[in-house]
Length: 143
Image 1 (spheres, rainbow, N blue to C red):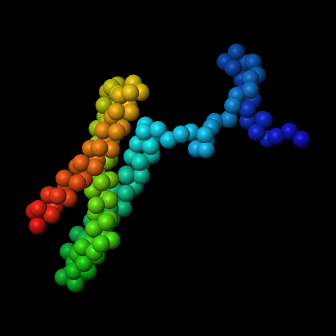
Image 2 (tube, rainbow, N blue to C red):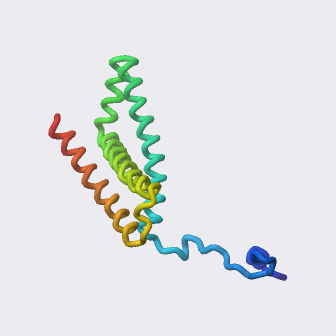
Image 3 (cartoon, rainbow, N blue to C red):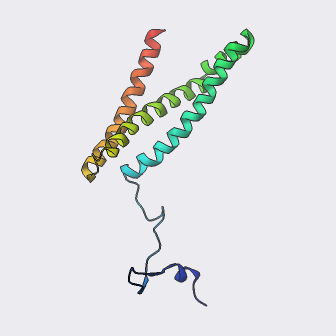
């Protein structure tokens, strides 16, 4: 009995000749690289920003609703889990911003060379850390 995967490996060249092509490697074969990791994290931070926006809308709606609702929302946001969520939301915001600038450069055709792509990926990570820390320093200094 033939393996079903054999049928998936058969293809045709542009002139119609049959060829055997390999199956695409999966996560077990690929080693994580900064370019692929930044792409996946960009998508994840986009989802995190949406979730953080729900938290912000809850806080604003509570402020408009009543003093008791606002006190509850403010208590939650001020708790350790709320602060952790805010720090994560801030990091997601800065990451998405920095990586968005990187993508904008790519849209203009810059930064596709492998050394440049690796350097810009690490610059996004470093920029995220620095901007997140600076933001929270400003938050605590402004109190």
